Length: 378
Image 1 (cartoon, rainbow, N blue to C red):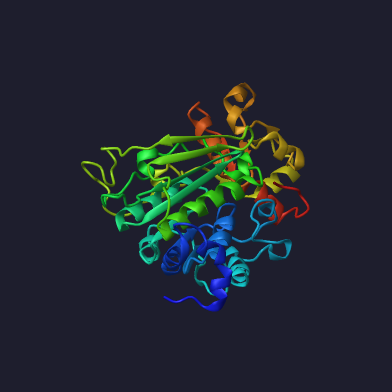
Image 2: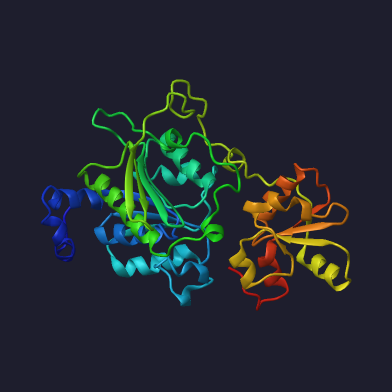
């Protein structure tokens, strides 16, 4: 595979690297990398993989650009708000390096399409922000013999590893299930939307993730296979922990029980439970008619201060401290940003005997979209 004159100039600093040179660049040019997610981690991943000369890059995402993305998702601008992230990313990346082939998947990665998409690539870079998709990507990579370069971020902390990599003896290294055999209970680990994230953090962690992808694709250096890199940006401390294969791993342990992709929402306990709900329109009618009910807001104080519907603030993490203040003899409407935390709150309260609970469907976002577009919601 020959290089054009433009490529010799573009990648000249790679050609001069000891142990990299034209052979490493050739391997990069032949490589096929799938990036799952174009958000905080996906932005630096895609930019550096494109700039480095990875020959074929697949981009999977189903989301639209939102103004709350812009403090960390540096592929996007204010003008892109409301547009599909995959489309905007493709436009930007083509301008960065027109020699790269891009495959765009403007869809959610699911158990139904994951094998079809992932089997076309050598390496998968997981830049997702939820546990069902992380387990899905991991399991698909193990079942299809693909290397999974993983990273995640939370508030001020990040972690990176390389899963299911081929070792010197030809065997595969540890995978995500060796590190995390079971997912945390729903609601225990807040998302970025709920817990926040330092804007620069995904740029740091995503760049480390890109470095691991490039090393694997180019065949250089020592990767994080069998190790978990941890970064605390607030204290600027790092640790590297060893990961060992688990003989009870249901994918590739001594007695595998998972031979095909499963329902990962159900596995992570995130299947929609049957919780009674109320629409924002009905809640507005209740308010107008002065119906007797109690409204509880389980968001965090900063979210509540910015915009609220006048409910009692009882953050989900402190909910059980407020049991004495929750009515048992009138309807209780529980609300949050989107309806997910409030559903978790209702399940918690139900275990304490409450049977008068209603979930505000769609949360305060639905109220804003349907009834009050000027309401500030973060």
